[in-house]
Length: 129
Image (cartoon, one colour):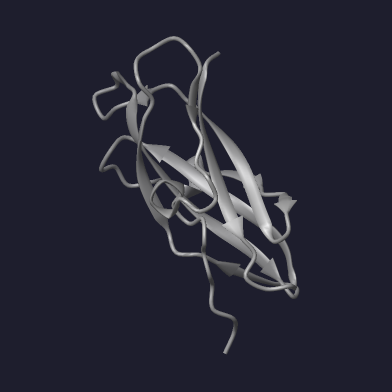
């Protein structure tokens, strides 16, 4: 089955970050995400010094609010950061996904410094007070 690929980046902002997960939900555009029933979680491995990356393989289409397949939908996501034994959460990010209509491979690959397309590529969470 063909998929639409989007790469998400996370830059560790401290030396004691132990792990980062990305949690995401896909919805029709302007629909509220159901985090309890539709959330997917993926671990983000280190791919360089303080850089984490995960390629998300998303469907080419999802059902819109009328049940019709749509190649335009929303990706909602946030990061869960394990730092010094504590969990922290990023703000919620949402972006529109347009997969196109072709049958060939679709590569929506973002670069680590491309914040507009990559969402939270340079996310910085504040430490505990």
